[in-house]
Length: 118
Image (cartoon, rainbow, N blue to C red; front, top):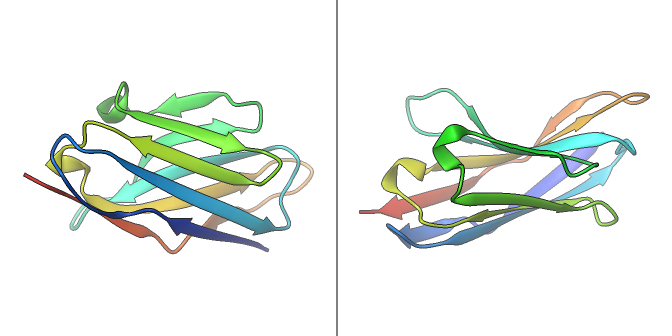
């Protein structure tokens, strides 16, 4: 089992910045991918950004150039730096870890609320 604990959400004005952090513990594969997803009320959960243990990153088009995902493999942490925030970025943000071979499993944090006021 893997436990994920997020922190850093809150309320910010349009154009502001927030930094989300997630710490993973438990049975974590040497090779894995960590990611941030978000879900706004009435909408499906969507991928925001991913990063592998090799630090290959991928971003949703809506956040490219504004958000930066990073990780510290030794500490099993992943951060999401969010700049130039917009009201449409408001959502509950979830940390995700996906174990790769030889382990498996897809794990989620409890979520942290991000609210961007206009």
